[in-house]
Image 1 (cartoon, rainbow, N blue to C red):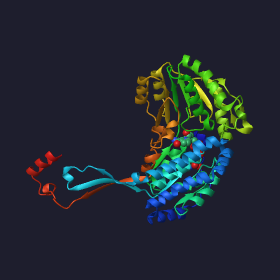
Image 2: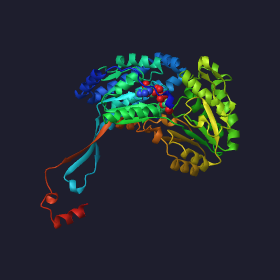
Image 3: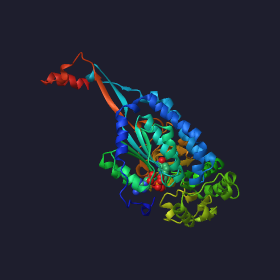
Image 4: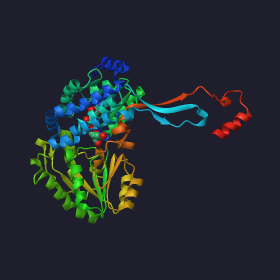
Amino acid sequence: MPESAVKTPLVSGPDYTELFEGLAAEFLSGKTLDLAWRRAQLKAVQRMMRDSEADLFAALKSDLGKSAQEAFVTETSYVSADAAYSGRKLNRWTRRRRVSTPIIGQPGRSWVQPEPLGTVLVIGAWNYPVQLTLSGMSAAIAAGNCVVIKPSELAPATSALLAKLVPQYLDDDCVKVIEGAVTETTALLDLPFDHILYTGGGTVGRIVMAAAAKHLTPVTLELGGKSPCVVLSDADLEATAKRIAWGKFTNAGQTCIAPDYILADADTEALLLPLLEKSIREMFGDDPQKSDSYGRMINERHFERVSAFIDCGYTVIGGQTDAAEKYIAPTVLTDVKPGSAIMKEEIFGPVLPIVRAENLEDAIAQIRGGDKPLAAYLFTSNKRAERKFLEQVSCGSACVNDVMMFMAVHDLPFGGVGASGMGAYSGQRGFETFSHMKAVMKRGWWPDLELRYAPHSEKKLKILRKLR
Ligand code: NAD
């Protein structure tokens, strides 16, 4: 999000103190510690996704022009599968994890015991407005917390629907939805939550972190950035083009882990372009504007912002726009002007520049010249190239020979590094994000070695040295 887009509250916001204290009291009652309660909530999430599928699809269509299939794959079935997985793993995740106790601590046992943090805040973004609020919520519930969800106001139909559905399905004493924009979020950020999961741009991420610092509230920041996609000449270019086109043009490019730009040499670029065109045509037909499978920009501001990127290079594919429908055609650019705006910020829309990289080393150097990406992609059949890329490119998640598919692997942690975020969630890592991993040691009574007690002596020191 550019600096100019940061909104600041003009009026003092609502007071959520009572709501927060109610949740804190519910947490202290011990209700959310009960594994049966957690399982019931996770089952309710699945029921909510199943029963309300048609309403959720309609809201996502209204906010983002998402097709039913896309809404199913990336939102409702994702949330449902994620909650089901957490439910199945709950026994294992909540179990004590034994660690070894050294001689000096004998007789004794040591373990790590997960405990919930308390009441947590989940602030979602608009691009996957169901997934980005409810997956975080499910992870927080699995870990035994009370939760406040703040969906993005930029996806208003989905936000309103979540505010209606969540209290119908989940325990309304422990899980709350607060709708609103900057004023409401600012008021929420004044409260001493036990953890905040924020998804969105880095500028607001800094605001969230600064607000959290006042209460020493730990944060997980799921941010964005430019996710590069390196294509080497030895890749299966037909499959490469299909997978990149799918990843880039899903949700009209408004995906935090979408391939932001391609890095390739001149010959690979020449071979890739017709294959990208073919893939786009196969997915969205001759006129993507008429395709039910193709989405729209979230609002006028993002429509204008992304449309302006088209002038940053030479349009080989697409380039058409329609402001009335917030439509931007799947677009591929070459000959991107050095230093142009499109290479300075995350594109977050359906415009795909191909940037020249002479070879893998050049591509890696270009990536390392910028912020650490949320995701980085490599297409190659060469194992050494793969190893080098994975060793030398620091990023939140990497995928070799595909894009975005790591999201389907529940137990791969999802999160950024450096400018693309801090902390992670998904699967067990999500459970741990919303847990404190409490260190516990239990001592036996006998024998009680005299060694550590005063009076200290040379003899005791000698034995202690041997025991270390
Ligand atoms: P957004 O405008 O929906 O903002 C995100 C949240 O922050 C919203 O709930 C909003 O109400 C709140 N917010 C906005 N201004 C605020 C302020 N001044 N104070 C407090 N809260 C405020 O979303 P966005 O920022 O446009 O999101 C797009 C960015 O999010 C992209 O960079 C994208 O890559 C990133 N993203 C990251 C992930 C991830 O999982 N890492 C997922 C989706 C999007």
